[in-house]
Amino acid sequence: MAAVLALEVPKIAAPLRQQVEGVLRRAIIDGRLAPRQRLTERELMEMTGVSRTLVREAMRRLESEGLIATVPSKGAVVRELTVAEGKELYAIRAVLEGLAARLFVEHAEEAKVAALVESAETVVAAYRDDDHRRVLEAKNRFYDVLAKSAGSETLSAMLDGLRARIWRWRALGVTHPQRSPQRAREAVRDLKELCAAIRRRDADAAERAARDQASHGATAALRLLQGAAPAVPAKRAARG
Image 1 (spheres, rainbow, N blue to C red):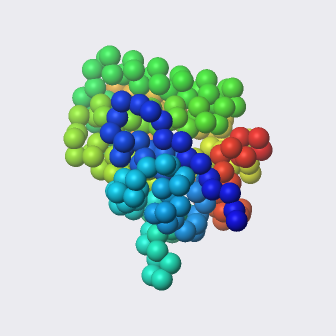
Image 2 (spheres, rainbow, N blue to C red):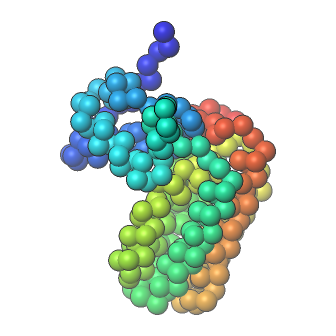
Image 3 (cartoon, helix red, strand yellow):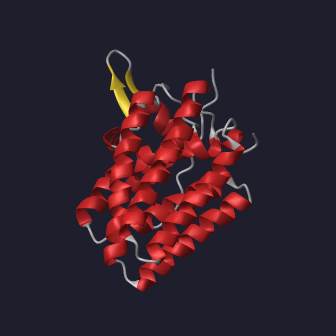
């Protein structure tokens, strides 16, 4: 009998349901729960040590985020990344993040600009240290600051709804063992160009830089997906 994967639910001051969602979400993004893997409530209860009700609620949430799919006669499975999804998601991301960059320039006060630049410097430092997990976490924080300080609740909500799917694709590009060494340099250059446009309050250039950033990310991620086997867990990828 195969060993049961243990997914520890941290003891933090947040609703247990959210903690379970976070643990399962991260396991999917990291690849510990692999694409096409069947997910049963009983197994997830054993993995997390929580009740069936909490597991069921978490699975519903992750299905709404596009990380889990229900397959006839098989039940819930981890959704597989596909080229079609990647093209569509990155196209949408380019438009939304481009608009977020434009609105950020038009509405964000200097303190918000400083916070964004500081978060970008954290990304650059993580790339310099070749710390893939830190890169991923820092990039997520950067885009959170960008979206939440753009002055549009509607836009922020739309990006928030895509957050988990974007995060999963970003993880593929950042942690995959077959990623190009040039990709890190390109990502840093794109990030610096975006921040430079924002600092000089050039909305057109900022939107263009954000769109270019998404386009370059799409090219890299889709190349990896088309030329490689299913996504490798981040723990292994970090040693690649």
